[in-house]
Image 1 (cartoon, one colour):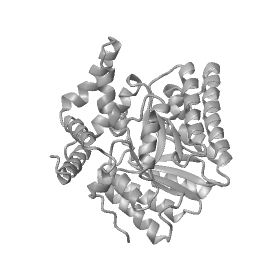
Image 2 (cartoon, helix red, strand yellow):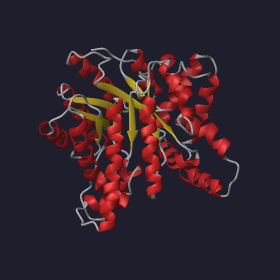
Image 3 (cartoon, one colour):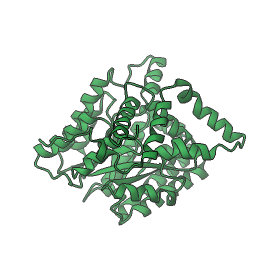
Image 4 (tube, rainbow, N blue to C red):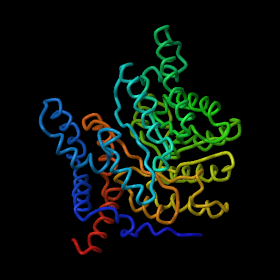
Length: 387
């Protein structure tokens, strides 16, 4: 089985200048301090509300590490830099938390703009959207609970479904694969139903519409097996570990319900690897994108590709990581000939603060992501004789 050297920092950071690496080191090092992680984003948002001149500081630090720009055109540099290393771009419009129909329509149009940008462009292999970007969370929660909608809510839900289908129709027309992100469990059944309806409509010949499987849930192996067994179309799945663990556990505890989330990280890893294996076992029907920052899962997928006599550049199989994180996985896999894409979030600086806050929190464990990033950056700076 081919083994990927994820510790090859020369390949991982060849696209970074010494200045880039030093700035990234200081940024990740700051994530070790709880005050910065927990209070910093709130202080930044408050400063924006007072019209204080902090945009330049935010944009040149955490924003530049994790985002491609404030609009699609500003992402051109990030797209070009990734393409030079044979890594694709997934443009992710990361504005969230809005509630108005006007904003939902605008977001729908922006997502379609990313599809238009990707059309015919091998440097942008996927588009992506969150259903809560085009419809109200509380409405989906009510639908998910099978509560009766009043006339206004029925009309509102029809508009949401219209936006959802408009995006998928655009992806189908332009031959651009589109991910529908997974969200909280108490709206996910609604998202799944919308997504699988679109799969049945648009995935008859090839996987255009992809659902997202959050493997920190206890029921995702069974969910995937049911989809494979019952849906008469090509299937697309983006696999992730999950993004709402604390919120899910707190809600379950408050409601006196069993937590839907795996009890340990080891069980989450086991679920992720099981789901990934099932997908490869059904590769004639299933296309996958393994969204993982985990070296072991990445190596497992490499091994599965070899075991099932598939090619590293098989377009049905992709790896993906977030911009600004896990370059040691992305660039070393791409260098070995595997299909890799980076999520490249974009949007106005203030509007993407919630996204940036999650990245800071995700990296805040010294023993976890931030410790790994700091170690690898330090090793590369030492190799270059710059530390």
